[in-house]
Structures are given as C-alpha cells and as structure tokens.
Length: 242
Length: 232
Image (tube, rainbow over all chains, first blue to last red; front, side, top):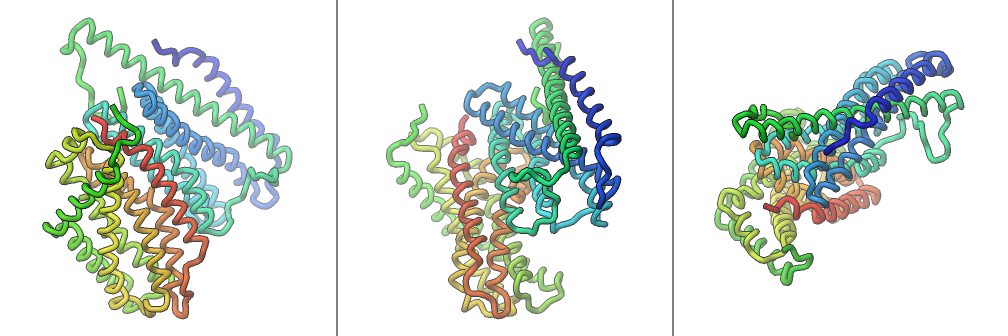
C-alpha cells in the first residue's frame, strides 16, 4: 500500500556519509574566518538548517495544497510531517543563530537583523499549526483546516521575508546572493556540502516518520479488521493524524 | 455541486452584510466593546509609558497596538453567532456562492474597524498625541483604511478557521498575529512620520505600497482557500 520504507536504508546511509564529509570539511578543510575566527564555523550548521526549515515549510504548504485539490487524506499526513520536521529544524536554527549572534555581535538576539526577525515571525506562525490541529475534533475537518493553514502559512513565508527585509537595514551576512556571493571557494564548497547533508537529513527524517505513521495506521486497520472496534485502543490525545 | 460563479453572488454578499450590520445596530455588541477596549488600552499606555504625550514612531506604535487589540475582539466574535445559531448550516443549504460569506464578513469587519477608528483615533489625538492630527489627516486616513483591509481580510480568514476549533478564542489571535505582522509593520512605519513633530503630511510611498500589495495578495489567497473552510 505505502512504500515509504523503500530506499530508506540507502537514503539514511547517504545522509550519514554526506554529513560526516560535511563536518570533516568544516573542521579540517574550510579556512578560519579572518574576522570571526572559529565561531564562524557554526555558520555551516546554522544556515543549512535555516534554509532547510524554510523550504520544509513551503513544502508542507504545497503538500497541503495537494490535499485540498485531491481530497486524499494521505497528502494531509505528508504535509503534517513536513511541517513537523521543519519546525524542529527551525528551532535548531534559532538556537544556533543565537549562539552565533552572541559570539559575533555580543547579544543573543538582535532586532535590527531582518532575517532573524522574519524567521522568528515565521516560526511563531508555524508553532500554531499543532495547537490548531489539536483543537479540532472531527478528523476530516482537522485535515482540511490544517491544509488550509499550511497553504496560507506556506505563502506567508516569502511574503514575510520581503516585508521584514524592507523594514530594516542589512546586517545579516548575505551568503547566497544573485551576484554569486562573496564566499571564497573552499568555504563555498563546504557550505554546499553541508546544505546537501542537511536537506538529505530532512528528507530521511520525513520518510522515516511517514513510514512509521503509515505502518501504525496499517496495524490499526488490521487489528480493527481482526478484532473489531473493541480490539483497537482508542487514540491517545494527540494532534498527529493517524 | 459547486458553481464557480453562482448568479447573484454580489446580492448574496449585500444581504449577508446587511444582516450583520443590522444585528450590530440592534444589539450593539461588538463595536462598543471594541471602542471601550481601545480607550482602556490608551489609558494603559499612558501609565505604562509614564508619558502624557507621545509622538512620532512611539505614537504610531501605540496607535497600531491599540487598534490591533480592539480588532482582535471583533475578529474573535465574527463567526460566533453563525456557529451557535446555525447560520453556517443555513448558508450551506442555500444555493449561493460560498465566497460571498467571506466577502460579506470581511466587509462587515471593515465597517466595524472604520467605526472604531472614527472614535478611537480622535480620542487618541485628544488623550495622548503630542502633535496635531490636522495636517497629516488625509495620509493617516489612507494608511488606516489600507490597514483595515489587511485586518479585515486576515481577520475573517483566521476567524473562519478558529471558530470550528475547541479553543477558538485562543487559536484566532495566535494565528492572526504572526499573519498580520508584515501589515502591522507597514502600518506603524507608514504612520510614524505622520505623527512626528513637524512630520510629513503623507506616508512614505514604500509602506503604502507594501501594505497595499499585502492586502491584494491576502485577499486573493483568502478567496482561494475560503471554500474549503465551509465544506461539510
């Protein structure tokens, strides 16, 4: 029925290999930043985390749109898992960003930086995804409303970044710009490998969670078929679709 | 069957809007509460900031926050009667375009906000503002109207999502605030120069443009997804 487990082993191995290579590059290959020194190396973790999280939010919105178009509940579960994983990455981004800001600017939080501020707003919005799901009882409506939220919030991500960017001065180091950026080659290579590693990690976690969810649902369906409705433990209080 | 353009959808909108405004006129529930809340918030700002007068960006922030809090009251109540008294079911049974409900509710909220501002903004001018409201009045009205569109559209959308949840009074504001953030930034930044001492009489074009674009994008987005919030 569902094949989320297929290729998971290979994907996981590729993820481990890429992330190992990325960290090796970070510590042994990429040059020390002349200005910021060793702390700059957190950039190879922070920026890929942030990019993956934002892409994950938009990905969740696209999956939500697929649910609204097709009416197939599986798209909603995919969207749920995509947003769930992106939220975890997003919290990681805030923590690593805070460490970096403390080391390089002297403060844990700097309002004058548009990227930081817009990331916080996006994260605050997506933190309401689960409370929203959690408080709708009817499962069909829960799926539909969550998808509507995912679509709106997914579209909000780029809009918000544009608006906040315009509101504030440039402080955040621009890494990837249209003009090719200002990273030296060794740093650029390290960064790209880290980015690929983080994206692979996201996809692996997404597939893993999807495999776990679909397996659990199949087990429940089988139990219900064999033992009747009494044989299935009632769902625990959970916002997760199942 | 859902029709893309049911005949008379504009008439449906007008009918629902009239019903909402009539209810409000007879019951006087939401708007007076919003006004009182806004006035009380101004008093809180007076003591919280320990200032007799404010101007410039601080005044813009005070005004934006006051209007936002008052708007939240209206947003929370927007669909409550529909849910409690079966208005949703009746609307779904009627052979009319569903988007009409979105447009009507957003227009009703827009009217509520405009009425609120007609009272709350002069009150703000009297109680807290250090400068005169006279010279920048036209620019201020334009900015506030654009802000009202954002509050009305996003408020209606959020209210329609929240009204079917168990904790609707909680869900509405926590979703609404981040979604409104870019519009609020533009509104506050736009009216900041207007309220400054010797300020300009017209808001910076950049903020007018951002606010207008945000309005348009969210109006289209709300129109696209609203049907899914009404299916049953």
